[in-house]
Length: 395
Image (tube, rainbow, N blue to C red):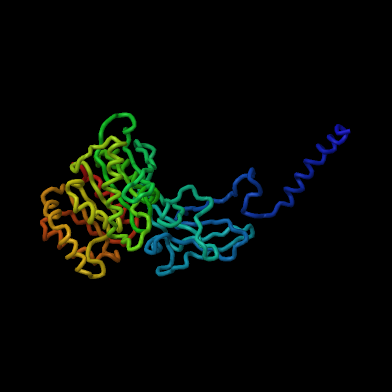
């Protein structure tokens, strides 16, 4: 009896499938797990340099493109001062789109979408960047001005590893990212180490996911401009506790010096002395470098401070207290440091910290290389500071 129904079943399935296909709704969403992905480019760089964003949300009524950083809004073509993002329009398939009003400079950018006021990364993106809280999608506009941080097929590449370790200092499992240079896996050599710290809004993922530190180092090394080195990117934030200070965080200090550095020296082939160890950071990470790198010449002989200083908000008591607490260490740093690199953009909201910080350095006779640029408190500057800083290390 079952065999009698089999031909009929075979006969009606193709027709039913065609009917279902014909009746399928016109939508940008995939119709099943096995159906092909929607045929649209999530981010498209147009021939004139403008950028079009697309996002599938058939049931939404308000979708906007947002930038991760307020002062990245201008280079991305958003209206200056806007906090609401780039308004998008929806077609009859539910696909939202918007194009920047101006060309976007060659570089790497973070973005997300505001859907009825709720931030969401792009569901079709292929690259993402973790912040302190949440996640953004990223895209790169190619071009000569940004080529220094672009992945290239014609150069050897290092490896970025994500490590986890136990920190007795904070009583918690901690994470860091570690870049090992091209050849590390096979050559058996020991390498100098740079500890590179992120800012207050970011995570240990940020220096690679949006900072492209690994690409920058690969390209510099391929051109013979930088000494091969290991780069350790710590988590600059520690577990919250009452009274914690983001910029003067002794928990981070104790984790760095008591747990992370010993772990790295025990598990990677490092040259484990101050002459072959550097520390640098941006914003909050720069504050960590001033407080826990500059005051430890026995650990770090090479330092980089990006986009921050002492005396925030004109508070000179901060400078006075810092000097009083670290007087002996600062005097030793004046004789022991190989390099102190200090960089700041003239449009940075922390630009006012430059004068008191440099005055303190001069007071102690600490020589430093100062790089003043245009621009503000953005990754656009920080990638370039790293590109200028790294070739000066371990020479």
